Image (cartoon, rainbow, N blue to C red):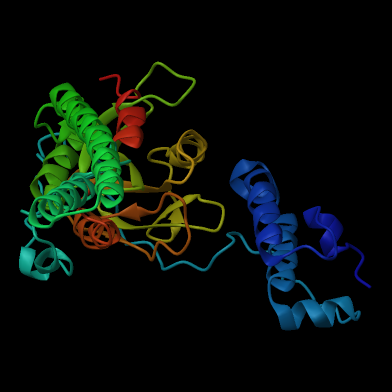
Length: 359
């Protein structure tokens, strides 16, 4: 057996699932990563343990005593592309602009009817269909009563049915009126707005423009700027987009042009090197809003705009909680995600998110 037990290293039982192993790895990697004060050797050993226990074949061999030898310690946990020959700082005279995105190149654009009627949930009252059915049944009973001669017994039965139909109809009518009042109260509260709060710096204003220009094609989309976490009174999250039961939290960044991606522990890399030009706090925000909104899918995204002339590209998001994204990629991928249910507005979820807007 190995000198270091992989199960003990990760703090999991021998029967732990791959998801449990992954969760333990993420937690440990945050403190054992070289950027967090750990050493390259111990972090590499942690990676080998993770890769072994999440691969069924390698795990089975490991459990039988066939232990893979760790690779020599590396300076960085992942192989990266070489950095460009020269790098320049921000250009104080450069004014970033929103990129133009041709709707014909957006996969979901033509699939969404922007004029589709919004569906509000949860539904209050019985709706129009049951009321119509009850009214039609009452009219039918009255027609039968007037069209034929009935015996006193049958007449009494029909009158009882008519009375029951009237009671049901009255109750449904009251429910329908209550639903109408609730809808009027909700629409009066929010008006016709689809965007709430105010963006802050230049990057946030670019994102606000991007969201309003493209994502509002989805009828159910509601946009929020400057949100506080549940235990905070500050604008901890730059933006949020809600559609149905899906929520995206966004941070807007003006960073140097280049290729951005995140590694297994959520650390940001630029052009193959650890990025030191800014911090991201979205992972904690995603966790907080998942606790606040049970039943709602929550994702994060870091929207990056160039701080000087140049292009922004990003790696595959994989399963990262807060992957970096260019504006073009964000609209294509997150719009597609929202387009699965483009017209639903959940009143309760909406109000919960709106209550977090502080700007």
